[in-house]
Length: 108
Image 1: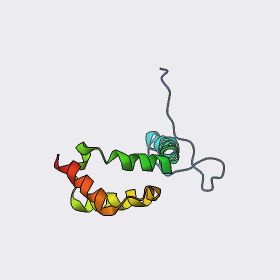
Image 2: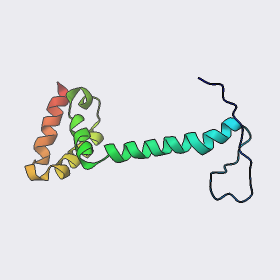
Image 3: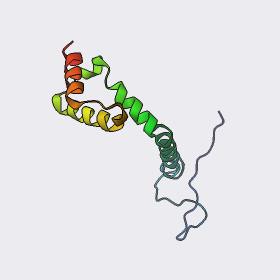
């Protein structure tokens, strides 16, 4: 890797063509003008790619694995039942039957 000399860009009062964040050191300048915006863009891109309806449904179904289910309290199970009934309404799932099944899985 080459040994680059980091220096801070000159500051102006009115900046229109490049970022001009306040900073005390070159490192802080590059963090604010390059690194943090890059992380924001990567985070936004990952959220856009992986938080669609199909993935939310998949994550809801993942909570039905008995290993995870045994740690849930009754409030969490009630919320899970509501989400499943709304998400899969075409299956005509009865709330009491689903609650009984989840309690049975939880007891094992």
